[in-house]
Image (cartoon, rainbow, N blue to C red; front, side):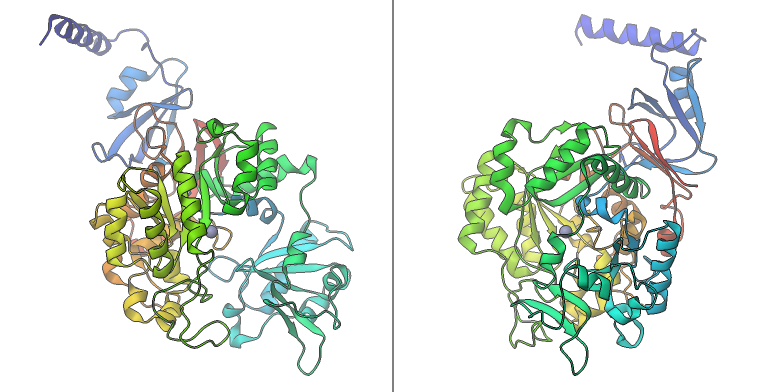
Length: 571
Ligand SMILES: [Zn+2]
């Protein structure tokens, strides 16, 4: 030990002694000290503490109440009594579609239960009427809804224009399909968008017709819906900040303090930047521009502006999509679906979203720029493709940490997970599928493959740090439900989908806190309650680590705090 080191220790000891002898005010009084409830740090070295001190939006210290109060409580410090509630790090959203939240905040939620009131047609109509009356929507104004799922309708009876026309003769009504690839329109909406018996069904599109007639029945999907989708109302300049804040409040109400925008278009990014510059951002938002928009975004945003927050908005990296969804039978596999293709095709394996050489060139471009990459891959065929692209683009240095995340990774094989571990690739799983589509996956892919969807247990055992997401607005932004599905893996039909892949509540919590912070290379500032990190916090009504795991989905978010400031409080 050097003399200087001994001197430093002696000074530290005398300071500590002075603090213990009733020294006047601490040098660093905290703005706030949280105590009086369970505090989960998600920091393995100190998993539970009695008190947390916060100053200037950052965590000062965590530890025993007496020590924290002695060292950091000054005359101006607010001691926040948690009154038995539970405090933990704010959630980081590993994958969703933030931009959609801007419009969703002004729409009717028609998800099927338990996520919404869309249990049957009368339920849907009643909810639309409630929305119209509550908001005093005038005649002629478009009413939009989201989350409609015909699979959830009793006896397979689908919502039609006639169901909507009875109560909405004078308002165009557009009920968005849960896939976001279509909608049911009433007659006023059909008139508005020029859809009639004379409208031809475009290739790759669906226009449902009334039986024995050419008259559209209500539902339009895929290419038939695209022209309507692109002419849907966008916020005006004055509305941009207002809508952005409303969208972010949906995240804040779910305890999310860092949100993800999973396939950003250039024009959307510009809107997000304008809104952020106008002070709209109450939480951090990370955008991943989509492959087809990448050059346009790069042209306006030089590489040195990526990877850092500007007005709480960060360009996180690039996004490419390699396949579709397993429930839509558009995920790309190496083996055929047991139930054929979406159009009744035999020996159907799905198809890749882009040609292999295009994917490889793009991955190399992103790696060469040193940017993080998010790759959407659901089927094992798509995942093989991305592993080959990685081997091509990262040749000579396969294992370097490049912050590559495979969004969904739902039907990843064990041998592919081994490669993830060697190549420093992170899986961002979607365990909510065990509930929403577990029974469908068993039919389409067989029990063995379905049992291994979003295999979080296997990934953790192989040394990976998996994250877990909602894909909002495809599923509601509900982090407790994300954790519940990772821990229980119970399908809508009540079957346990792959009991061997269940994880502990703490492991499931890490997937939306510290592991997600690693995914974004923000582990030094977020994801756990440690001194120096941001005071991004959430208060829950119960300790999700102590309750019966089956009740985790009922745990409520009471308060969300971004950098020491309350941004959401439950009524
Ligand atoms: Zn997505």
